[in-house]
Length: 421
Image (cartoon, rainbow, N blue to C red; front, side, top):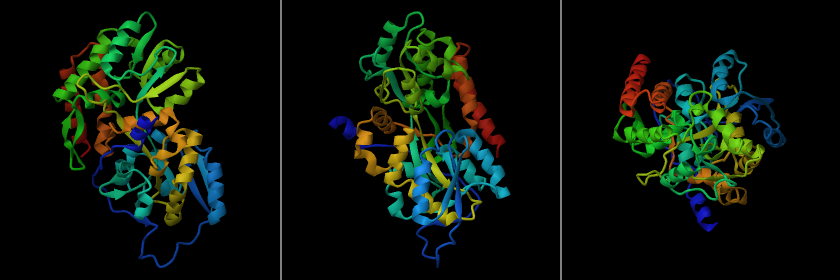
C-alpha cells in the first residue's frame, strides 16, 4: 500500500504546454485589480455537462445557489462530438450556455474560433491542481479552463482468469500464447485505432508533432521514424500470430472486444476508465493496473486526456461563470463528483484521500498517467486521426507493411494540414 500510495502521490498527469495562434477575445478574471466593482449578479447561469454525467450537479448547484443566490440551470450535451457544434450555433444566437465542458484536445480549435474565453485566474486557484493538468488547459500561453478530470488507457484484467497483472509486455505475450485457444484470448487491444496504438508507437520512439520547449511543431511529424516503424511492427506481430481475432478491427472493434471480455473469454484488455463500471456491471471481477513495460524497457506512452470546464465567449456573465468554475472544482466538490461519476480529478490535495488511495482504478490511472502524453490540442491534430487509422488497419489486415503504411499516412497528414492553411 505504501508503494502504491507513493506512486499515486507522484502523479496525476504528465502533459505538455501546447500552443498556437488565435484571434483576440475577451478575458475573464477573479483577480483583476482593474475591476472597480463586482459584476451585476445574474438570476441564473446555464451549464452544459456531458451526457449521463449531470446527476452530481443537483447538490452542487443547490449549494452554489444557497451561497451566492444564483440559480444553476444545467443540461446534458454529448461532449466529445456534439457540444462544440451546438456551441457554434447557440452561442452567437444568444441561446447558449455560460459554462461548458470539453476535452482538452479540442481547446485549440474552439479558441481559434472564438468560442471560449480566456480565464485570468489567481495562482491560489490554479495551484490546487497538478501543473500538468493546468498546462493541458493552456493554449498559446493562456489558460482557458479549469480541470475536471483526467483519463488514460490502462490494463484491465479478469482476476478469475489472470492471477495478477504482468509487469512486462513479454510476460503478457507469453501468457497470451498459452491462453489463446479457440474463442479465448489472453489479451486484446484496439491497436488499429491510433488513440490506443500511440501507446506502443510512442513508447518505441515515434511522435506526432515534435515538442520544441513546450511548442508543438506541426511541420515535424515523427509517425514514420524508426521508433514508429518498430512500434507498428510490434503491433503487427500480435495480429499475424493470431493473438488478436479479426473481429476487433474498425468501427465495431470496441464493442466486439468488450463483448468477448464481458463473456469471460478474454483475460485482459487495454481500455480506459470509462469501461470500469460496465465491466463490473457485467459481473467481471476486474483488476486494474498500469500497462506493462515494452520489450525495449520503456513504458507504454498512452495518450492522456483532460476534461475541463470553460466559459463561453458569448456569456454575458463571465465573471460569475468563473466564480462557479472555481466553486465546482474545489476539493470538496471534485471529490463528490468523483464519487458520483468515477472520473478522476486532478486536485493535488485529494491524492492522499482514502477515496483515491483505496480505489484500484484511480491508482492505476494515476500511475499510468506519469508515462502518458497529452493528446496535442493544436488544430492540426484533427488531420492525423483518419490517415493513421487507415494505415494501421492495412497493417493489421496484412495488406501493407508497416514502413510503407506509415510513410503513406504521414504524406496524407502533411497534405491535409497544407490544405487547411
